View 1 (tube, rainbow over the protein chains, first blue to last red):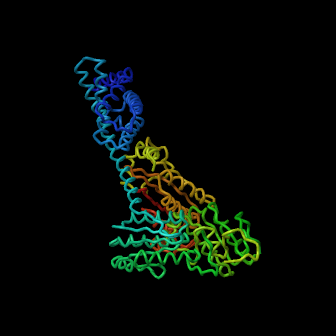
View 2 (cartoon, chains in turn cyan, brown, green):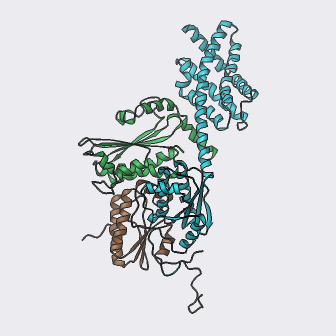
Length: 298
Length: 135
Length: 181
């Protein structure tokens, strides 16, 4: 069996070397026919991919690593399969299409071997070998695809978070974030980061966090809100929280936070009125005494 | 008494206000020397206010935080009000999460607002000839 | 994030050996690792999870360490706030090792198991050790300069925090932060 395997392997190597162009052409054509390509990829790119993978396969087969382990243990081969799969995952190709892309290489390879031998026993052995080799590639490709999609999903959920927490400018030097719905730690952190960035960008003196639309928060989120207030102050601006509902008031009270330093208002309108009054004073983070002359700002 | 080692951090004087800034590459020894130098200057220049611009600081760890709070306390004891201006958003978040509050330290969004708070004003127009009617 | 960026970042996710290493990481926390010296270039996976080691022997080293950790956070794809968190934690731990431990080392390791990315810092010193870790983690505890937020603060800034110490046996702190967003 070993001798026949090695002879089949040599045969395959030879086919890969001598018919490289042909195999690549056929593989690209098969992918185009099966419509497994997304519109984002040009034929030229697919062809480049094919050339890379085929030369990596040829180099791998020439080594003495067992075929099953070839794809996972040969770095160049592995990397080529991973990159191919990631590219498709990011371009939005379906998992079926991505697997088919790798698996359709089987047909292209087998066709090439057919030109080198007519012996059916040998062809059968070659088919088995190609299957074992490329099934491993298919598995790796699928795993990579799933990881790549995970990455896309994570990025999208972050983008969604950013969209769902808009920081708006309500008045000269006054910003507000109206929060609606459930607040979890991740979302609260995004709010905090985008609010602080907006304060810097707009030179805002007061930031209003309106939580009228938030039914309840857990202690971790309440803690984050308080962190936000403190961070806003460290930057040299003031923070007003408006629309605290009774359950949230309870959570904050349970945290034992000293609320005496935190400015709260019942409604967003009240908060805005308070904010405008604050902007009439010189802008200093904590305990600033009003200077006799009002600053002239434009 | 040996004079404090110069740190290379410029301390400018604008009337009775000293303007200076902390740099990212300040090591511990230089930070201590800077504190000494600044407090000396408060006394020798009779400063009533100090503006420390920290917009270049990429991180504030507990050592830098302590330097800032100590500076503020010392300056206050010497009769000057300190305003720390321009803390970056990421630095502010990290500082809060680290559990530091910079107790007693006044902050401003940027150097300009800090100076305004210390009594300096931006002129709406170039100063006109004296005697012109004022609103 | 631009599509171009995504592609570059993804190349790291798919680096050779990532998956295999990921499993090992989960099974054995870094405490089980042999001294760092032996690890670099040990196998075919050597460049999958890059790690570098820095001396913390003088004040200048503290700055060097901060720069190195900052670079690593950028490579791990951290956003600006996470970068600041990790660099600040590194600064606290390195200063602890320098002030209390009489100098030590800081190792930065990029982690990439199963598509996740993270950064692990291992700070070692051969100092007197911490007699009571619980007390040391409380705010306000300090035996040197600083506000006593070193250990506790670093713990709050990172996702995972482990400390191994005994009187006379030095201190090793291992902290990890994941780039989950």
